[in-house]
Image (cartoon, rainbow, N blue to C red; front, side, top):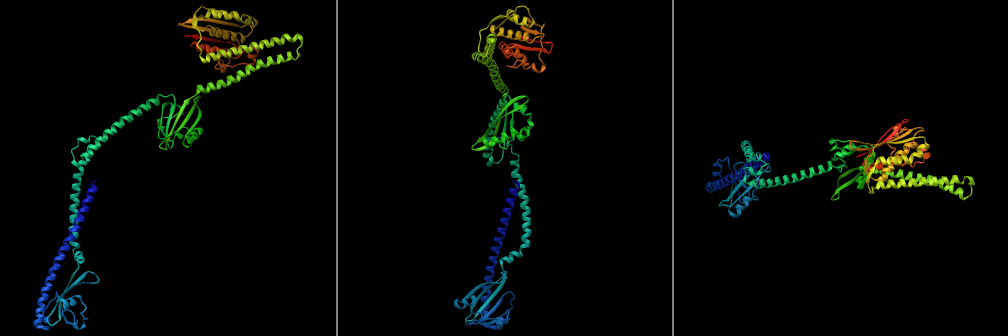
Length: 549
C-alpha cells in the first residue's frame, strides 16, 4: 500500500508539474508574441511616416539589426531590403501580407521554416503612392523555447521529484501506520479513520460468523471422530485422487497403518493388487466389493464413490469383519456335504440289502443277517437324524423347559445304560462323587453325559477304564469323564468338537458313530453357559471336563 501511495503521489506531482510548465510557457510565449507584434506595428508606422517624407534616403539611414525592412512597389517589385540586395529578390506580389495591404491598407502573416524551429512574422502597410512597406522579425517556436528551457526545467523537476518523494513516503507512512497497527482480532477496539469504520464493523461480523462456523465444524469433527473411533468396522475416506483423508483405528489395525498415512495415496498403504483394482473400479463404476484375509480373519471391503453436484469428490471404504459369517458359511457347506454323505451311506446299505432280498438273491439261511443289517443301518440313520434335529434346535436357540437336575443321578443312569457295551469292550465304567444339582434341560444334560461316556468306552482299549467324576469347587459344578483309551493327537484336539469331524474315520465307521456326539456336547454346554476343557495324550487317554457356572 505504501508503494501505491508513493507511486500515485509521484505520478500526480509529475503530471501537475508538466501541465503547469506547459501552461506557463504557453501563456508567456503568447504574451511576448502579442507584445512583439504590437511593437512591430508601431515601428512599421514610424518607418512608413519616414518613408513618406524622405523615401529611400530614410530607409538607408535606418540601422536595425532586429527588424528586417522591405519596400515593395505596387507591382510586387522589391525596391529596398535592409538584409538582402533588392535586385536579387523575387517578385512579392503573391505574398499574403502584400496582397492584404494592397487590398485593405495593411496586412500580416506568419510563416514557419521547414524545420519548424523558427517562425517569421510579417506586418505590411500601403503608402500613399501605392507602394507597400513591410517589416518582419524571426523568432524561435514554442518547442525551441521549451527545449532551451530543458536544463533549468530538469533541475526544477529533480528538486520537485526529490521533495515529492520525501513528502509522499512520509505521508504514506503516516497513512499506513494506523492501518498496520489494526487489531483485527478485536476490530471494534481500534481508533482509526472514520472511513474504515464500516469495514472494521464488517470484519467483526465476519469474525463472529467464522467463530460460530469453526465451533460447529469442531463439534462435527469431534462427533465424527468419536463415532468412527468406536466403530468395529474399518473406515477410510479418500479424495478424488485416492489420497487418504481420514482413517479410523479399526482400519489402521486392519491395514497395518499409522496416522502418517493421512495425505498419502491409499495404494501406498495397501499394495494388494485386488485392493488396487477395487479402488480403480470405484472411481469408474461407482461401487466395488472384495474380500480379503488379514490376521487370520476374513474381511469384506465395500467401496462407494462420493459425488456432489455431478462431480466426483472422493470415495469411502468400509471394512466389515465377516469371519463369523465366513466360518458359518464354510461350516454350512461342510455340514451339508457331510450330512449328504452320512445319510447316503446307510441308505445305500439298506437299499442294497433290500434289493437282494426282493430279487431272491439271498439264501434262506442268510435272510436274518441281511434283515439285521437293514435294521442296524436304519437305527443308525434314525440316530443321525435325531442328532441333526437336536443340533438344529440348539443352533436356533429354541427355549426348552428347565429344572433342577442332579448330575450324579444322570451319570449313574448313563453308566447303567452303557454297561453292556463296556462289558463287550472289556472296559470298566465307574461313577464317583457326590450329588450336586444344576438348573438345566434334563434331556440335554443326559445326552451330554451319554455322548462323553459312549466315546470314552468306544475309543478305549481292552482292559481299560472310564471314570465319571461329579464334584463342586468354588461354587461351580464340575463333570469330568476320563478314559485310558487311545487319546487324541494334539493337532486334532481343537477340531474334535466340530460336526462330523473324526480323528480316525475308519474306526468311527466301525464303531457306528455319527460324528455329531462331541458337537452336541459342545452346543449343550454353551446352552447351559458351561465351559469345556480337553486334556489328552496319545496312547494314554483323554479327560473332558464340563464346568457349570
